[in-house]
Length: 227
Image 1 (cartoon, rainbow, N blue to C red):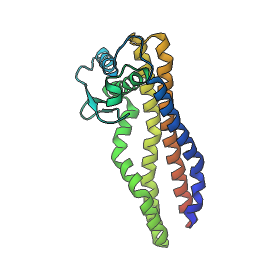
Image 2: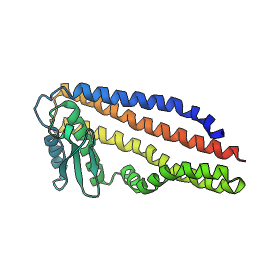
Image 3: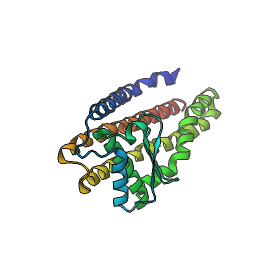
Image 4: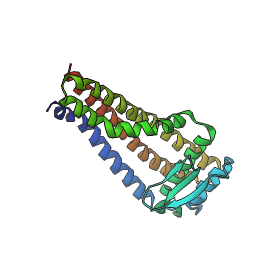
């Protein structure tokens, strides 16, 4: 089948994605064994960062799992995973500070975050329906071209979501490092390892965006093969 040959477009992106995943796991594991010099826990640092920005109403909760950390803008809750919440490691504090960065973005109305959040429903729909629509359209003959076009349009929203995630994540990491420094929560020796953890994590978002772009290119090639 035609679309099977386009899988070659994904190979470089998938290799990079595997590298990014290995990089973040290796970097986090390395600095998860290194205690910060002030003895703060990740939860304490996140609380201090939020309070320093006047976000006293943002709660911090412990959630199950490993690296399931996230900020929920609807509930205004910063959720830290069990492996992060009470940890004093540089890696855990870097993650907690990053998520606090998202809370600050939300409070300040950071435009890329607002756009990304608004794209969530359609991006999820596009990621789930695009390929079924394209495959169905491919087997329907000429009338199926419209289904393929709809599939591409839906998947484009998923790609846009991945692309706009990049500045959101980079900005949250930059805010985290700046706030760790400005609030004197880390020593100078601890800052660089934290930066490495966040840079490694950022690679996973770059990889996800690259995979999505290559998938969109595959869909476009399939569509053009019908004309």
